[in-house]
Structures are given as structure tokens and as C-alpha cells.
Image (cartoon, rainbow, N blue to C red):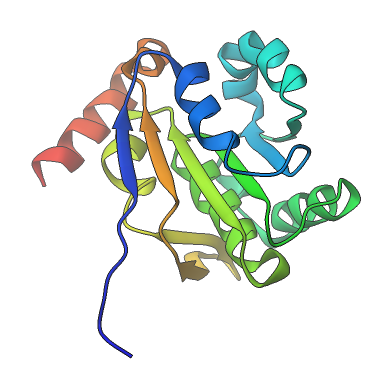
Length: 180
């Protein structure tokens, strides 16, 4: 087998629904799912609930914060996918910062031995680092990103409107990562 590398398609867009529509049409109806976290859901995702409902996309909301980047949260996503008919032809859309894209990406790469996932990063740090490069993972046994996989998302959709709601500290952290 060759040493080929598959890269994600990175899309810069002002219209999340339009870009997501292009991707979800590639998957069977009822086989597209959404994972997000509480803060992002309250600030952004809930504004698009009509779009998700009309496209038969079921949503799971994980509690916010790095302390939730754990195997129990992954198990919640696995149970959600299993209960709602997730299979190898499914897509998991991950909308959130680095914690969420790492966690839900890991859940996707391990559910049914791997399903497609698409990241919509909502912080500058996740837009320049966490959502690209194929790194997924969770914290385990007190160690950061102790368990994980490498698998590129099918796409990363970047919308800078999300940056309007991040605080100065998180913006500077993302900017420092860009420089690094």
C-alpha cells in the first residue's frame, strides 16, 4: 500500500446551511447526525434548529468544558448514534470548539469502526488547529489527549461569525497558535 495522505476539504463560508446542505445530500436521509456542546448550542446551533429538523438531522448536546472530554461523553455519543440508527453510511457533524471536535471526532472514528465526520469549528484555536489535521481524542487517566485516533474529517467548514462570541483570552490563544 502506498504512503498516500488524504486531506480534508476546508471551506470558508458565510452560509452554514448552504454548505451543510451540499454535504448532507451525499448521505442517506436520517443518517446524518449532529454533535455540539451546551454553550455553542445556546449561542449558535439552536438558531439553525429548523434547518436540522427539516433535514432529519438529530442532535446530541454534550456539557461544555474540558472536563467533559472523557470516555463517558464518547459513550453518550455512541449510544445516541446507535439508538437513532447510525450505521457505516452515516455522517456526524461536529459544531464546537476543540474539545467538541476532538471528542466527537473520536466518537465518529470508533463508532462502527469509523463513520464520516465533518467539523464546524467555532473558536479561532479550533479553526486553525483542532478541527484540521485528523487529530481526535479524549482525556483519560488524568492525561490530556491520552486516547485518540488520526482520521481526517470529510470537510471543515469555517465561518468567522462564530468568532464574534469568543472572549479576548480565547481569541489571543487562537492567534498565538496561528503564529506558532
